[in-house]
Image 1: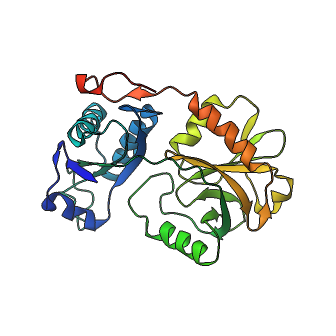
Image 2: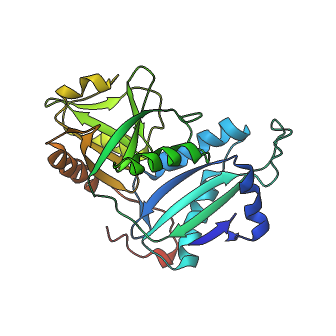
Image 3: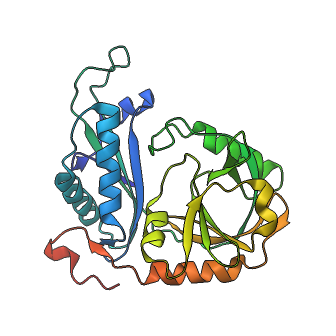
Length: 270
């Protein structure tokens, strides 16, 4: 992994403020120096910067740093994590106006497609609408699910309504419509792209676990891929593989946005 801070190779002193655990990020896949849903990723970073720091993020500069990081790492295909934090943030005075910093981490590309069996757990992330760096709880719940023989955790409300997965969103299908959970959760970029381009009927509504008997299929998605949910709490969903294939076909047709105009980028090649 290669890490840059504000366009320069990150030094130890740049990374120490991460121990404060106050910041936010977005993760994305790059292919041929291009990204799907780039506007969604930049909007996520901009909105969260306002909420956590009360300041505006120069998204044009952030995009340029992303392209520069790829160039310096010598990778046209990669996974990027863009983290916004502040080396000047003081938890003793959190209302103080401070400039923000941007970390761009470049690592090998990934594509998640393997089906999973998940179990439900009553849990909610702090400030669920923000993709913040406070990930301890969700990884602890994923670990507990793995220890119990499942592949991941599905978060639900105290009333038993489906929220989201540990690091992913999900959709269910009742044989007529694609259904998205309405409960508070982090709204993902892959979810937004699917909602924009899904060719059939869809709806966003409360989805109780008790209603899984009427569900025929489900898939999970995030910026790293889309995969079938073969079972939830042991209830098998036989149509999930076919639904996941349909979802991947929808995403495959979505345009890719180039990160920069540097000659190094060349043709998009997607």
